[in-house]
Image (tube, rainbow, N blue to C red; front, top):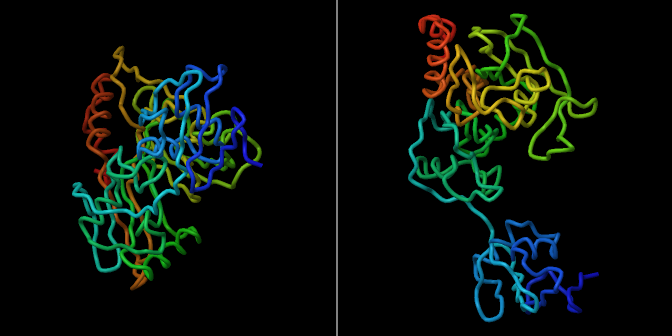
Length: 341
């Protein structure tokens, strides 16, 4: 049954625009929040899109998202379906680490989203690749062409992309079978006592904060991360982490559950600013997590292929700053990172 507001039915189907009148109790609310509370089947993002498209009117005027509504305001909503999304080419610089007729391997910078979604419609890795290459696999759909796996927005490093559907299916099967070998470089808060280990805690959506995952519950999906220490810098530990499963935020959630959140990862409990040698460092501005190495069988030839992405410059510089504050020779840092620079 459609919800009723001020005696009028509000439907979420296209056709005749719906009209509602603001009650005394709702006066002063933001327009987008008001409509979101009345249309739970639509996301707030979609409601904002309808406002931006001019499909919402307050009286005779097109409003803004944050406009405050008043008692007696008559709101008219045209419930138009969202246009089908498709990624389009954009001229955005991108570094290719490997390229052939079947696939490309990209060095994704931190801050770049892999594909459109969750309010992001442009400036993505897919947009950049379509401009650079012209065509990608259609196996994952028009919004995510070529995308076999993903990296978080704040994570930099190596990512493989399929150029056609046959390659896509072959690569996707390797990820499903867990035969792809992934190595990440992460800087942890705290000093690990052991030199290597495994975290095998299950991972689930955090029931208290839905934007993050947790490995602190008994329930969840199986997950395993192997790790080894590369270098210790005072109260920080640089590690190479190898996830054997591909859970969302796996490395971040695993080390947070172990009491060692990644530097810069405030979502999982790391402080906003690091302290070392009596110095308080400026916020890193990203999570210290870099996909350094990816190994898989070539989808056409079956020949083993390993591609490495050098540690992001801002992360390398950050390690130098920590080393300097702690009186550690930079050459020791570089020696620990041999093979990742």
